Length: 427
Image (cartoon, rainbow, N blue to C red; front, top):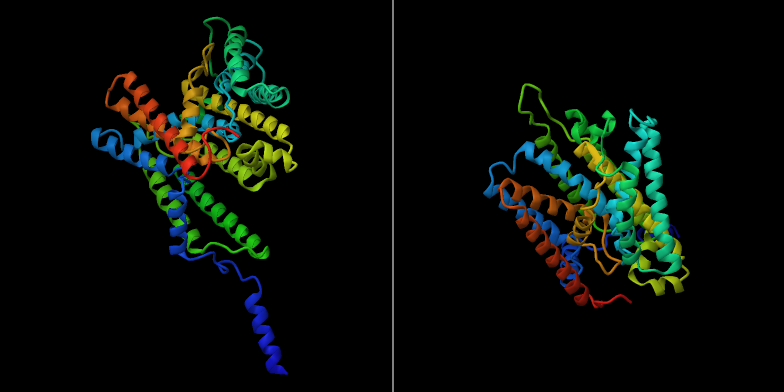
């Protein structure tokens, strides 16, 4: 009798959900084989952009002795921050198969309001309150766009093109023809022009590693309780090791003195942790919330999403609101970098933002892509601009190269979609 009980206990123990790290969905070799299979079937994600980023960095390092220096590296990060934020904003609407051509001028309108309201020689409003009004303005513009796209049914290209033209006039009215306001708030200027203490950069890396470890372990526990197999835990340690090595190299490089005079300049630019925090929040929303899952469902097949009970109108409305609000934050980054806001603020950047998202692997057909893809694509474009500038090549070459990279990325997206069994047209 005791032998039978012991046998039952062993059987129950074998069939019960195991601790974290057990119940593997294949080993490392199986995961590698599955990844290669996904690539062959067309699901390449950000792989082409990452490969392009590495190739460009190696190429410019060979061609220019100034490219891989701590000063240029910090400059590259601050140059890319505005485009990274705008690309992440646009990912929310591109995932729906939509577009927002007014994102750049939306940031222009919001920042024009900010400088007019907070100008010490004018209204002199508290800068925090003025910034909140600017963000609310971006949110209202996004809701306005979402109403006409989702409720009225006007194509987003038409609505946002109209606003792209109209908001340029609104900026002129707010800020005045030929007017220019300097950013007076040290807190805003510090975002792009000041750095964290060196020790804070290492603390930031530790926090990133701790959050990555904690969220992954919680995911594994949740999957174990649900009876779903986990991937081998070796992948977690490999990912943490990669983050630690790459992050450590970046922070070590930024911790070097890059000042040209007696005053030492070192540390991670303040804009970097702000961007990483927003990236983490946005990724959490897209990956782990019902809104994120519905966004991908609507982008993949709107009619199927509607038939399954998803409120397609509300999802589109919310996506445009998020896009315009994040676009205002990209405007804050830009104003901090330039130090001023004029009537033409934000006119020229929106197409670069779309290009960054597509280059990073976000599908223009909707339903595929992640926020990190937009960030990687923005870094690729920033490297092109930065590297060609160091080589003293004409500005026209920059546009030609960037345009070529965009066409190449769109072609890869279209071909991979066909290989995955999709279509080149929206359903």
